Length: 109
Image (cartoon, rainbow, N blue to C red; front, top):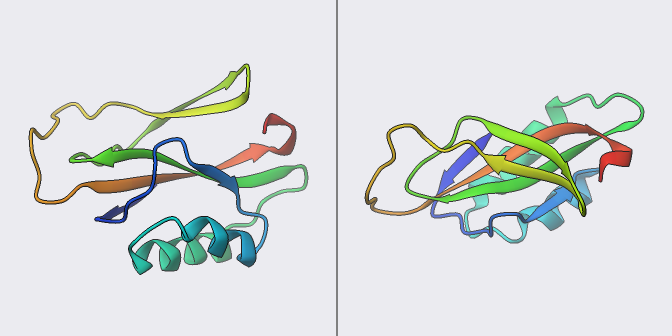
């Protein structure tokens, strides 16, 4: 999970990060350069086994940074959702964007 303040993005926006170009293209939606840097670092550090892909998806934009997600197969493919934070903040100075990075079977997408 990567969380960045004032980064923008839209919940549900996801992409397969198959190479550095895909990482840059996905990171283009965010207003904070920190997201691009953190996604690149995560991509470079991840070794995805044959038959799987690295998938990134925005799971939250708001005052709370979730620490866990649920993953289910839906009619349109993989559905990833943030687990609600137990002690939610009522207000914040700036919203935080949380991106989940998942290793998933290629056929799940």
